[in-house]
Image (cartoon, rainbow, N blue to C red; front, side, top):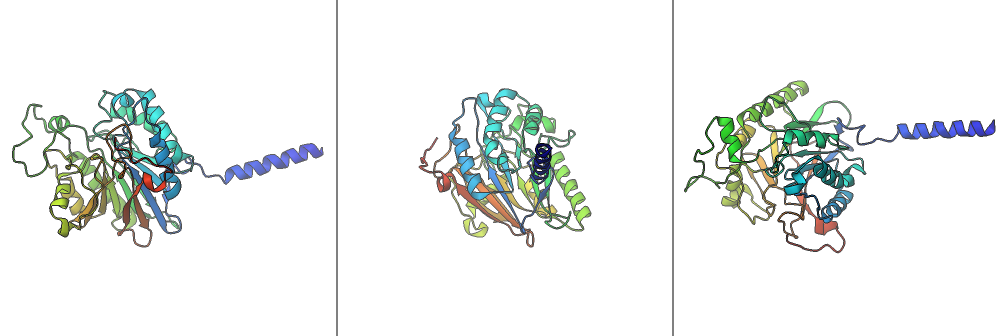
Amino acid sequence: MMFSLQLLLLMMNQLKASENIITVNDMKKELRFKNGKFRILCFSDSHGIKDFDKRVVRDIDAIVKNTLPDIVLFLGDNVWRDGAENEETLRAFMTAVTKPVTERNIPWAHVFGNHDMERGFLTKDQEKVYESIEGCLSEAGPEDISGTGNWVLEVKSEHSDKTVYNIWGIDSGRGIGEFLDYCGLPRETKTKLSDPLHVSSSYDAVKFDQQMWYWNESLRIEKENGGKVPGVMTMHMAFPEYVLLYKNVQETNFKGVHRESIGSGPVNSGFFATLVQRGDIKTVVVGHDHINDCEGEYMGIRLTYDAGIGYDGYCHGDLRGGRIIDVTEDDPWNVETYMVRSSDYVENYEFLNT
């Protein structure tokens, strides 16, 4: 009888304890300020392959452990080559790199880059794999607009259900061919000019239907909250206005490292102008150009780079790391953002250029 009573009490205590444990899945759809603060950590260009370099997991673990973000974002080119070949290779890599995040009960989200679909594994099918991995908050987004993974995560007040800050993710596409298809133009249409207004490459751009989606979602959130809600826009590839930063150092308060050209597409789709006119995005974070971590401000928006984190694509050892965005609930319109390095936290870190 005594044994049964002790067993019953033990089971009740275990049940009570389990009720107090908040898992990643429990908070899957709810992001909130804690003690008036919210921290976002971005990683870009992990470039996972089938037999990936395990140091990328080591670095992510060290940075997450020491910065303790409230959410981690993976900003495209998460996998490439044989890492982007099928569900098995994608799941293996993303499970490995998100483990340091989820084991600390931190949720994560992602956007796609230009390399994620290079082996023909469609992003709409990849998205199903991402969403099945523990802690993933990103979604495929509307099926009737371009791209996969157009989403917004609303960060609620610590003390109410009012949205204080928005985290946006948008699919910046793959190559210029997709943009030509969207416009109904033949693939042989000339897009590269000998004297372009900005860096001319073969990359895609955020399309008009995506911009309309962002605009309307922003209006919805404004209406529900009684005013505009500030936020950050995250995407893989920069838009052409990033070129203006290093060409106007003093005017844009340009700073940081700029070691390669801005990899934007040849066509300016007007996304930056859309953000300026809507007026709720005050920070943009991009990856794609692995050895840039520079930033500057133009038209009231802080345009920032997140240097690469990977070892299976090109990256410089002194830049490798992630970008922090610190938001305070009492002043969400003015955030603090800065780079954190693998070298800051990894013991015996090798300053390896890959």
